[in-house]
Length: 303
Image (cartoon, rainbow, N blue to C red):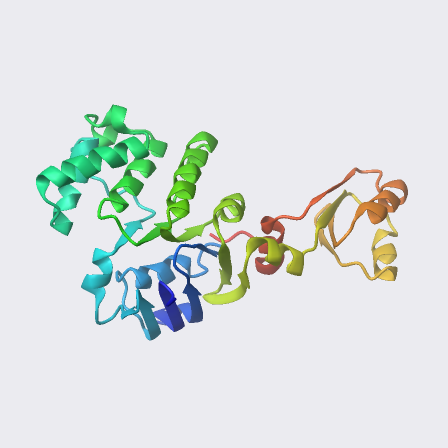
């Protein structure tokens, strides 16, 4: 089966700034594919090329087997896009925002009304259909933008940081809806800053930094490959711990007053460290995608 998205050697520049630099990947039908990276990594620039908003500087990009540079109109008719920004009309009601948007796809008025109400029920917004968009909470606004992106019954849903700024309850509600859509076979491409979101939703993902791909694979495989199964955290480690780890060939990283140790099986090592070097406190936990992300992209702020 042909991939839904196939990118080869994508490059995007803005003057002297190289935002995307030789990026290649593919997205299979029916999977959720994630793009992760710090601020300025090139995530949004990449997906804007995919949905035809931003022209390619170089490379080749096909969506549904169609070249996006020559068939943008046909591609746009078959995708749904949920951008970072809230670009709803604040003076229209929740229902009107969907019904007006349906005109861009030549959906008949009677059909648009039915689809809109169906999607409002799906997003748990049917009780607010007559409210103005300006009166909705942040979580409701994001769900409404997502409902709008589904109005044309897309074959591919593109989400740019869909839950940024939402409270935990709203975030989990969005996750549940996305899981339902994926279970129905909808292909999903998303960017996110939330590692828990990526681990829960994405079948495969890539991590970018400075416009280039660092790694690509399944979340669980990336954790095992780049971190291991366990992470030991030692607060204010006592003198001698660094030498102890070097003797055993165990990698560790120092961040201020905290030492992080990545291991495949940490139970015996944790016991010995806690007895000999751990007066300031130490803990052992399962490794996560966030450990992979921070290890590959660093811990300095990106603003």
